[in-house]
Length: 485
Image (cartoon, rainbow, N blue to C red; front, top):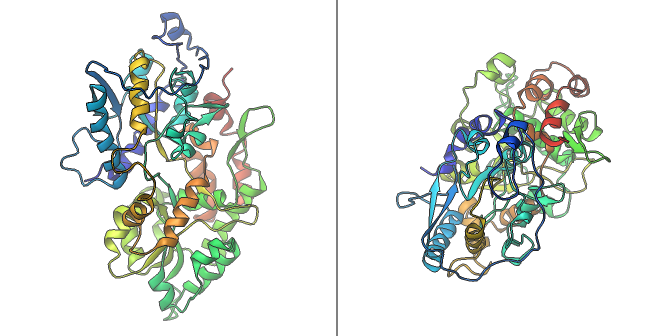
């Protein structure tokens, strides 16, 4: 089983890893002093002159450690790897030979924060998604990459994965890097071409996307056509849209309307943004799909808070519903597409699209807060050796040096044969990936359960009223993560 199937487990560990303590820590190079640890202060890291060190050196058997829960393996011999995993493993083997080193992969420890606070390096690189990344930045656990001599994130070595580093840049300082080739896109909409044809819907969705006409209005039009109650019992046999989770259903429409639940204000402070009309309009649209137009498939168990929170729907359950024609459109993360939908889609043709563009948005959008990358902890005292390997791993292995193979790899991994349109949309969404500061606070259940889902799923208030009820409830958490003095 691929490690990426541990997504739910890995995400549930986020709180244990990083939220248990927001105490700051940090150092200029060596481990923190006892006084620093007790005071919870975080020292500033000075920027260094950028100079990428790519010269081959003998590292004398140095053991370079990668802490990762997903997509990286110490022993990949029994793993059915995806292309990006295979590319990294090949480069890993080359680097071990060229630099006389050992690259070891370990799990991210459950007590990561405690280990860092105790002065441990943990690993030369620690895998974090952007949600965890910002939580760790706020806690003072990570070293900005521009403070590491010999590491230049503007070097062409990092061009292909530069979007992740851009999204992991805070207050003009980069904290994250990625080795994913092909790169990682977090989500969008999968659509059942076979069902659309069966229902007589002839719109070319890929062309609508290219023409900039894939909008909230057009999506509603198609969802209405796809919602069919053929026997008149009041329960449609097919719906317009379904989502892999209730929170994603809400936040993806907000994001698609260019809404952000927390933003940076004119003074550089991260603040709540619940009253922004882009946010209200995005949530209103999601609410109307489910309750006014009844074109969203919302299981009865999802219509009440108690039964919703009780769970009962696995990712495989949702995928089975989708491939069996329950809805024309399925909002999901791309790992669901390549690991669950593609293997189950023998009898349907499917495609991939971005979330439709909201009326307040200028372009298509992709919520990237679960994009995975790596960071360097503040306690890493082996930077002179580590930076050599960090740079070396960014080079492509033999046979993969250029980009000519990448489109074919994306098509093979995620889509059906010949689906070039979906490949182009996938690449476009990578460039359009973004991060909402709200995710850095970690536990968002209060926001989901008291505002977003009550409006969209449980009919417990208008979007504007439930969002207004959240005013002031998240700011203390945002201050703790982002606005420390």
